[in-house]
Image 1: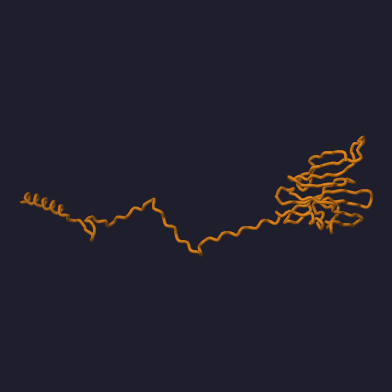
Image 2: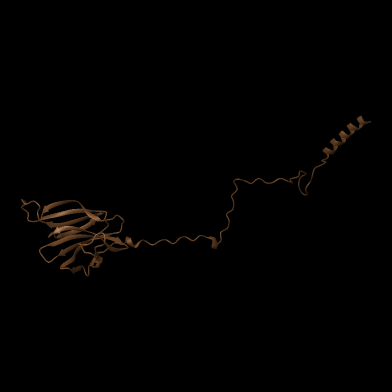
Length: 221
């Protein structure tokens, strides 16, 4: 009897499987259950950008104004400039002296601004200035000087003085390519010279805070 039931049960099981026993059907869908499955994200799909409100929009930083130091100095500013500082006193003065209308007097001495040139000597694209000064002590000595003024916030600031010599009148000064050119008259250094005066054209460059001569040429005046 047991041997007869086994084939019958096997046949019944095959029939039930053929009829879809155990399948689950969802309304409107196929007989295959999609429970427990999830869609795979498309790696090429673009992620939508979050909407930015006006309050969240970054504000561009305000552009800074050009530094006032980029404005060139003028010769008119030297008319009332100050001469001397702690590092480089002017003509041994214990305190700086200030020109008024281009001149100063005191201790039996007179200082006068004779001429001026404007140009960049420091390489910062802010034009500096040099003033030609005549220092007269009342005797035969007439001392000529070149005073260098740096450009700081578009105002002249005294830096240093370069002595040209006694009774060596400066005829011209100019600045170009961070070089200063000075043309002045001088007595011949060679006693055998037949020329009464020599016209010297000297070139200077700024070394630290001092104007240093880099060369010169002489011709009879």
